[in-house]
Length: 90
Image (cartoon, rainbow, N blue to C red; front, side, top):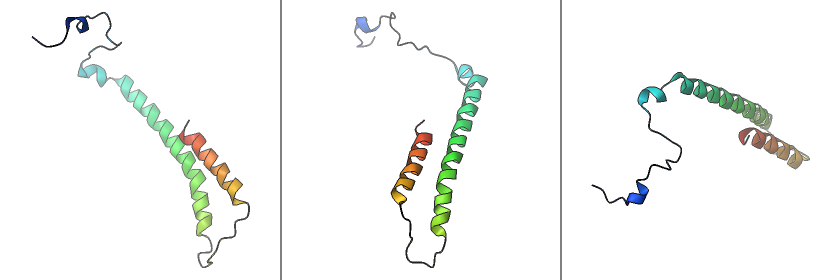
């Protein structure tokens, strides 16, 4: 029949899963879960957008100037990085 040793054909440990048909997989439960997860990610992406776009808009101001004067920028940038990581890694 097959080359699988008999001790591995024992059904006493099935790793906690079972086979299901397609109807189970396409049930409304999965659709609801997808909708919930999609909404959470959209909210997170919107929050990240609100952190990044103002920075980019401010960097675009005065394009005729060769240099940007931005004193104490390291703490401000670190604060934005911390906010972004707080959203994207939660």
